[in-house]
Image 1 (cartoon, each protein chain N blue to C red):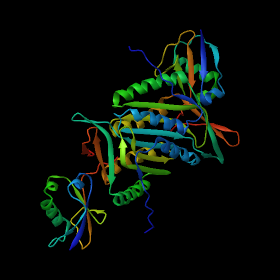
Image 2: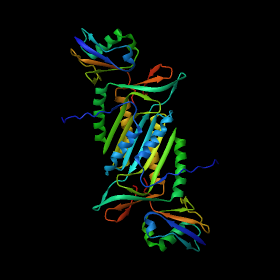
Image 3: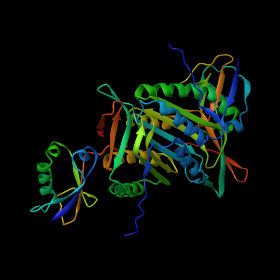
Image 4: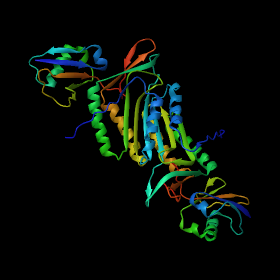
Length: 77
Length: 77
Length: 147
Length: 147
């Protein structure tokens, strides 16, 4: 299936917005493993995912055409 | 001796600034008794004294020409 | 003992929002500041026995209040790492909806500014010899009491 | 479920003190209010390894941030008896000394406004997907991290 990836803050410097063709990945925990191997810089970093504009708090199922945001720690204010 | 009396807030409505000739009164505790008998409305009220611009926390000695302020509870802000 | 510089905190009548904006803008050159905390007291149109508060007339034992404020200021500066502290209180008549108290603290990080501001407000209300007379719409009045 | 009205909190560039004054002045007609609490974040000219921060460039995951802010707003209104709550955050470039965050709460008595304001600031910093990029005077940058 195909998902859309967006990223923010310092992560946006090495992961550009893109469509990803993934297979065998059904949940966000699997996706994290996949992302960290595809983008090795990510593995040492603190980050959170948001799935379709919802922050991922626990392992969530991913569907075709979902949007996943990769977000480093927030620093507003 | 002679002392000067000033008053504030609701107390200023029945005790006007004035000089008081007192005798036999040497400390603020005695003065309170005297004031409450001279101005009966004062006796039911909460108030503090200030002696020469210092709030009276404990019984203080009064000297000739001192200024005593009679102050109801504060309500600034 | 070092020489005391007693600052005035009293302003005649209400505190203008433009004055507050000016005060904020002046801190733009203080680039070590990261957080500002402000408290403002506003006169409420309270209803008491069917009468409405039109305004509060403030009086103070000014010399004692400024002396006391000086102590409070020193205590707060000693307790919190502040860059700035400003306090203004109205004297005279302040109408309902107008501002009678303006407390403004600034620090590098947010916590000291926030904590100092709220401690200042508590201490001012409890310790400064200031009195508010609530003026009702039928020309009667009542002396306010802080609880 | 009731219809959600998602309010925008983002403003382009720094928050002008005149805007803050306007916001304060508008509350003059709300005569049930007795206390206002304000927090403002200001960009610090921090020094990092000999370089000075000239400005912070803010970006956000706007839709998620506004959704989250809506929840926070509802939580805070439920927890405190507030008359008003206003939050503004900059996007884009804010120079050292300029204001990037403005939080404004009002209530009949002082305590709810003060407590709600400080809780709001904590929650915004922790929960809103906003990122600050510190721009140094030698054209390098560093991504800020809230501690």
